[in-house]
Amino acid sequence: MNCTQAPGLILLGLSGNPENWQLLFCVFFALYLLGFLGNLLLLLAIGADVHLHTPMYFFLSQLSLVDLCFITTTAPKTLETLGTGDGSVSFSGCLSQLYFFGVFADMDNLLLAVMAIDRYAAICHPLLYPLLMTPCRCEVLVSGSWGVAHCVSLTQTLMLSQLSFHSNQGIPHFFCEFGPLLTLSCSDTHLNEILMTALVGVFGIGAVLCIVISYGCIFHAVARVPSAQGKRKALATCSSHLSVVLLFYSTIFAAYLKPPSSSRSSGEMVAAVMYTLVTPTLNPFIYSLRNKDVKISLRRILNMEKSQD
Image (cartoon, rainbow, N blue to C red; front, side, top):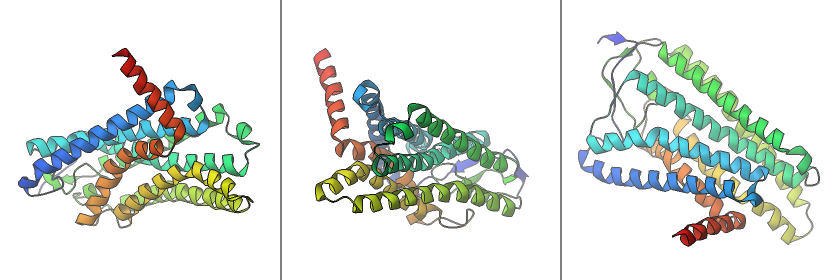
């Protein structure tokens, strides 16, 4: 089979049975619409309410922005594939999706670590919190995360662009991803796998360690609070973030704790659906349902829309 550096590719999607495509299309469309509107509404609520212009909600608004972009990176092409049965994609289009997918996935990872640091500062050093988490430092943390995510994803994408691939091959996935693409390469991918694993390991494991250490300090500080009410109040400020962390990393680990070029099982495909679509869709609802300030702000927005009608 001929090899080329600009192959035509075909996304095989989630199911090889066309009878399931209509149902999958409806499920994906509902999740995408729900996730898009949920994250957009949360962004509007935080931006419109001056009471939510604090470090915690600034980071939450960035998470909503990233999740909105994250689901838009993969869901439209998946819906096109399920709706038309045509999963063909150009190599340049595949690389573009790879790049943006990497950026937003890395940003989710880094933002969750930054938000853990914010909760650590708020609970373990409440008197110094306004000095530790100034607007300037919050912006530096977020802009630094964007910079790191861009560099990591660009490096991975450029490495793939230098490989040769079998032409007109099917990708056993519903979006372009690094691991499945490596299996189609005619080139020796051993070095690429090592480099990609190193990049993901350094920043991925680094973020996880940051979260674990932050919550270790938080739980230690909460254990020293004398009253049960004080402990509940302190933990309540972390409950939403901790729920999102557990949901995100459980699906990520299920999908990626294996060599990049090995084949995928149906369980790993489900995990990929969870972290690319379900988790970003649930995040705004996890935060809004457990947060009184966000609920109040959302009611204000909805009441304003009703009064205008």
